[in-house]
Image (cartoon, rainbow, N blue to C red; front, side, top):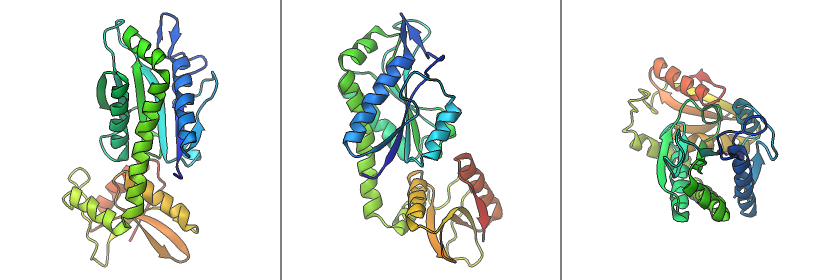
Length: 284
């Protein structure tokens, strides 16, 4: 599988994260992240780490590393904590919003960790976390049990490899399914599926895809001489449920989104894409 995945061990350096009886979150996350990355590499995934030693970098710097690597996915690994020891136990996965392939990947990881013996606390929406908000690719944050839970710590230590393997399996399962989808589904079918799933007009974004009009507004996210680069951006947008497509014009492969009768609707989509990290402009 030709994917690049960023693995981000939470905290590091002068930021220990949560601490319980001398146990530091930054150490657990680094060990687990390296183990997960190793399994992914054994399965043909190109892995980029935000850190491989005990150093601190800001969440924004980590997100920037992922963006500069042109990665397909960003996986941040943490451990949870609560106000009182042994108050809670279990794993959860955080995502920016409840849409796109990140939602499926989060569910797959949760399901695999449950098989190891962790309590599945589900998926939480956290739109204000920098590593979820500032990454241009689908991003998730895995909370690998509570560090102040003796039960979770015992599982983490005794089933360490299985814990790493469960996270890797959840990632790989999602990538394989996505690879089959991209391989076997045409761009036109993807756009039609998007329209059907949103009843043609998405009320959240007031989108009106009017593809048979001569004068329409579109949002362009990139123009490439190399078609492979355009395809990469296209698939990334489609994985986030964005109705993107490619047109070839003046020697360039242009990645564009939507077909809007009203300028206001194109502006709303442009703002959404800018928040996702894309450089955009509106064209007709």
